Image (cartoon, rainbow, N blue to C red):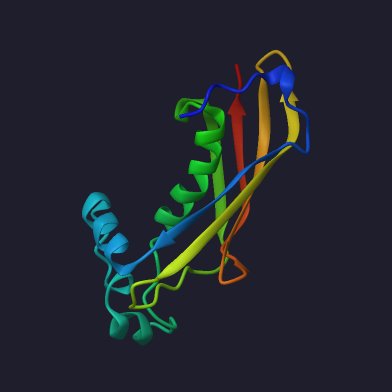
Length: 144
């Protein structure tokens, strides 16, 4: 983790360090084991295609968690995230190869919310294959 960010040092527009997160089928299997979500659309091509998906897709909660890592790493404390929400706009399609997919995440401080509580709103952008995969992705973070 990085050092905690001081509220006084932050202004709206501050960019958080961007990150890229590779996702392979093996990643999805490990996540399924940890989360208990063994829905076949996350590991079986035939099942995914039968429900109209182009291929196996990453778990939505996995995608959401990877995007949140940009914020928690920046804040220096996962507990600093007081609120977090997203809308799922497109699935992350994960091909059956060694490369898999890539989730690219950027974020910026959109606003200072409360000087006394030392909270800021962080807007997050997550894409895969050049397409936005999360919409309205926002976190409220309490800084030191």
